Image 1 (spheres, one colour):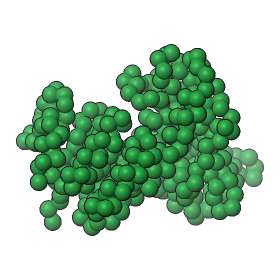
Image 2: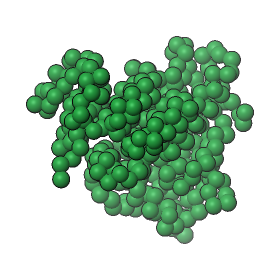
Image 3: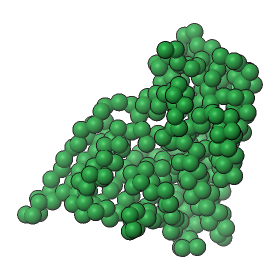
Image 4: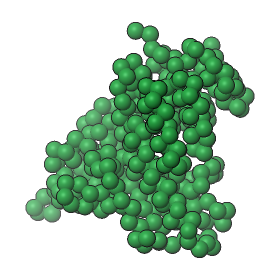
Length: 330
């Protein structure tokens, strides 16, 4: 069966990965970007692919059934809205929007027009994350006590209002998914503007996950100023502690436990060695063909946007100089 053709809009560092995967899946129809050098690079990597610098041309093309948006986050709502109004299915990188009202509007448009709207919460397709989810559900870790996600790197682009809009969607969506929690609460927020340019580049969130009548505590720590990349999730249980280190090439997921004699034991669960983005793109195409609702649908994305918008208000409401300290339970 011939797959629907998609247009990838935005072929920067991440967009190029989407172009590559949809090309390998046989679904790439056109690449769109305002930068001619990026289009040249797309042609060099994928000879014969159609390219354009006109978004309107993508929307007017009847051969294009879906638009994949990998542009800066402050453009997501407008591009996704225009695509849905043009009758195109939409895959948009995280976050879906910067305002919960915009997220709701996009969901309503997609529902009214019977169109697929999927958000790129990549980690929900990660084989190691799904392996960990199964281990948690089976009771392998025991009673969960604490969850922490650290995501740090060095970033010069600094396009988002804060590091949290850039990195925390991954952490929040992944932690909520692992714990099967739709009502994640923010207890405390902290952030620092180390460059004195109005952009919070180091931040943390203290979270609470109400699950089965009890609350599991959690924390997210994000940074744009750390020269040593860190992408690590730690899930503490009464029996075992899981550590998912996504910067490692092998043995990304490890289970740590102690024997009665106090000896530390480390286990490495097996899971499929498949690129998460390939699985995510494949899932989007499957939804286009079957009409099923994506795993990372607008409801999933809405919860993340709601949390981040609340966090943004807490950060912006406090006095500034460049050091913004913890907000407490406000």
